[in-house]
Length: 235
Image (tube, rainbow, N blue to C red; front, side):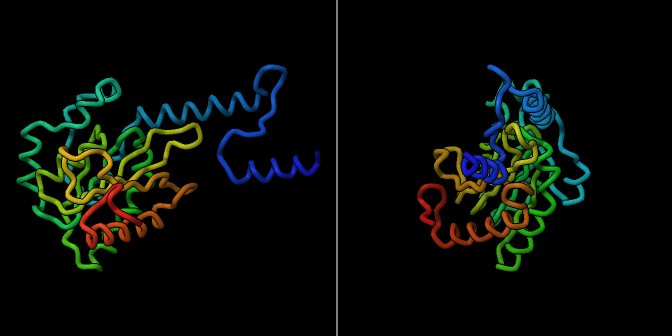
């Protein structure tokens, strides 16, 4: 029994999952319930908050918006978060570098704090790593009210070889700062979602942004070499 207790203690130190929390009769213990409600509040705040655009401006991202008008519509109409107006597409074409080797996009997604917490560290590592390898960088773009498929629209508009979207993940009950990177070779809305290679759980208690940035640069190198991404890219 003592051995089991030590095993459980070790497990609790190595995971954020709610294991071995005990119970009071048929219910959670008060401490567990309060922690659950507090974590749920963090998740809700992550969804309903906004990216600090002073960070975006500091990084010189070109800012655009999907067809979504507000947060409520963003939650209710995922389809609008995948589309741009014709005027926005023309604005992207007229103001951003065409035919880049690598097009970097940041999007708020379902967790704005994920962008606030991680975008600076990961962007600088990616930018410097990709420039050192001689790739032509596109104008970095920030998309407000973004869904993953916005990367396909931007790729098509700018004729990008590889498109990278850094986007806030749907928050769990432990953190609201987790970000994902979706990458695709010649991304297109005519291709399936399996075209995308993904690095997820990017934040300080998962894959730290600096480490993730280096990993993404390596994956981009492989995509350029193999001219493919997603399930077709054998890593």
